[in-house]
Length: 373
Image (cartoon, rainbow, N blue to C red; front, side):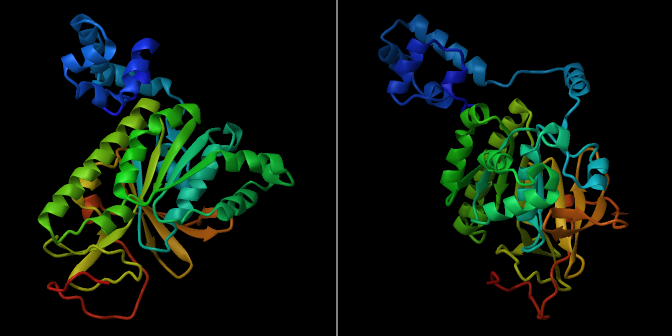
């Protein structure tokens, strides 16, 4: 990846110091320079500049790997999955959310996307004896929805024996959850480009983005062709960086997504967050951001309403699991799976998977209508 820091390329400290002094800190910065520019910066000959270019190129270029090596690495990795604490869901996913990949949690407002994200953040900080990863989490909050109070409440109710009357363990938990509040698409992209050092220094074992759709839908209008192209390019960049980080550091990455209304011709008519969750005969509700983003995620979990109390999580896309559903409730201890709520759906395109939403007063949505407010 061109966003790789030069500090991780093996260049000497003397060369690094000179390059950084000229605001050249990533492989992209260096490879964008000419040989003459590098010669002047390093005060050296062309041979030294060529050596620096070669080392940088080799460092950020993808290395080919055989199928045997992939299989061998998978066999040697005994902990290739991150358990969600939902027993039956972890079973069908062969152990939980796969490390080294992007997992998406999509659904309407109020279904528990942020609750799920906070619970996963709690789990990753727990010791391995309690089903955790004994690491830290980078929680990127684009909606201002993260709640430290909810994290503490969830911890004390889910692991009462571990956190009972022990302020030290609670302090360790909260110190391991690093929250970044991001307000623009450019801020998010730059934050992702600079995550490598934090992953290493802070021992990050999970990255959460809540949500990936929020900023994009605020800044880009789908009614303008140019904006749609720019939006797609941005999502592709973000997905590429996330895939790189997940694979290189073998960590799970979880992103939340919103929903949108599609009609029979698959044209998106409603690109605003469906907080009330409306659905009529001519359209259906599905995950937002379109097919390009849908193909970027490896695992997709769809959350939907069943009753005012119960919700349902659907494995809509997975390389190892069938289309399966489980019933859950949101309680003080987090997301709790309910017994007897498992079921199977017939496989279909995950981009067209319909989502059940909260019931509302009926009204008609015409295919010629403008964006819903």
